[in-house]
Image (cartoon, rainbow, N blue to C red; front, side, top):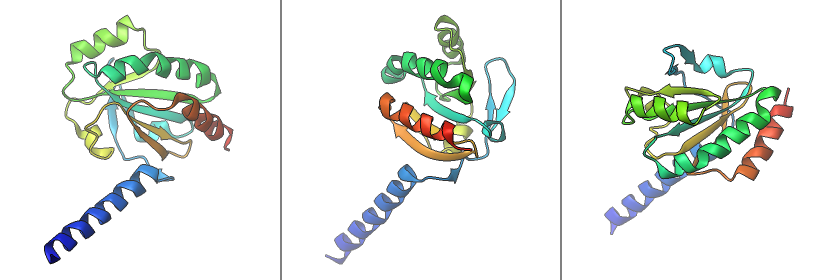
Length: 165
């Protein structure tokens, strides 16, 4: 009986920790280096000053592919106001597939390939795609979505964050 109690207590602690992370506001985005398709690099520090959507995705992910037109539309709607998007392809995604996807769909934002998986690990052991983070102008994670976001809610959040000084 004691063992069941300890297992249950551990589960509650883990669930509470997961909830805190999922809802954590003002958590600094982890230090990361993103290698873009053109070979250039961006870092977490480069995200500061803009509201940024960081989207972990894969060409083999049906939800990722189906949400991409909405990600593009969101970028197009807010980019001129200080909003950016960084799509991070997972380590298991063949680079040629990522390049082909980005070119054929004319992705207007930066696309990175996480060849080693280090970026996904740094951002909370991301394994499920799509996983999307919203980072405010101060470089803090304000929201994480697992699965396709509710884009109406996402747009309200972006509007709010863009209005902040």
